[in-house]
Amino acid sequence: MINSLAAEGCPQLALQLARHWQQQGVLVHVLCLQSEPNDLRPEFNALAIPIHTEALSAGLPRFSHLASLSYKLCCQLRPQAVLSFPLGWHAFIAIGARAAGVKRVCAHVGNLPPVWAGNAFNKFRLLVQLGRPFTHRLLCCSEYVRAATVRDFALSRQETRAIFNACDLERFVCMSRSTRPELQPGSLPRLAMVARLEPHKDQPTLIRAAALLRDHGLPLQVWLIGEGSCRAQLEALIVDLHLQNQVQVLGSRRDIPELLAQLDLFVFAARPDEGFGIALAEAMAAGVPIVATDVGACREVLDAGRCGLLVESGSPEALAAGIRQVLSDPASAQDRATAARQRAQRHFSVAAMAQAYGLELGLP
Image: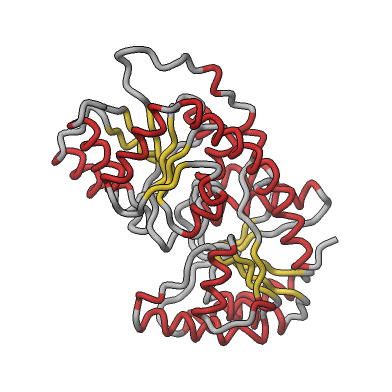
């Protein structure tokens, strides 16, 4: 069960799991709670995966509607297990599914609990507590997220499990960076960040770092790849800093492996509430040198800096210094990139993720 078919984290994970399980002979159905965005529908349709779309009513009635919807659909399909990507609302999905006789219901946890949200978080925590008797396990995308989930939702560790998110390794590993010529004198180093243009990412720090580097004699070509609610703000910042010729907002793209193969450096600027960063794992698989902000999720994914340079979060100066350091020491950068690719192949495969999810869901 997912919110929508947007080309972003949770729907992409759902697609990867569905594709893998289908190859293993598991029949998968998808329930979408919003009809738009619809970016990934062609991929699901290509797999002939049935998609059920149901728009929820507004206000408090939506909760009973969701429980009823889950109950009716589970009575119709008789699934062995239900996996919910919406957290909080999973409580009503689980109530309906368990009432219909479903043995196991799990929910995905992809971000830190929003403890800073005041009353909104208190309501969120109440929903998680409501779902506890009906939920087999909360599946957290990292140990960092798991620790915060246990602490902030007042759960036991036994109610949770950390399972790394995954990426399609074959698509990224096969795109060799050797196809891009070495950086030539006079050409601009090419950097990119792939992420939703949302407040919990930190593209503004990267834009400001690019301005600092330009002012200190190191102009860059920067691609911001992704779409989201902050696009207009980011474009305005680019204009304010006179970076229109250096920083481009490319929007949502489906050719990420090909774009990564053209980079000198991948930058991932995130805030402390980042949960994992699938784009970070993709860059690791592609063997691109990485600079990332030193927040919990990035530190865990990059193995405490062994697989990418970590710099202070929220500091354009620190990010600029990290970018300069990596570009000026390509041998060390390549050593970290090689370690990153090896780590991605060991820990971030779809097969490993699907096997771990399947174990919790009781799949054969």
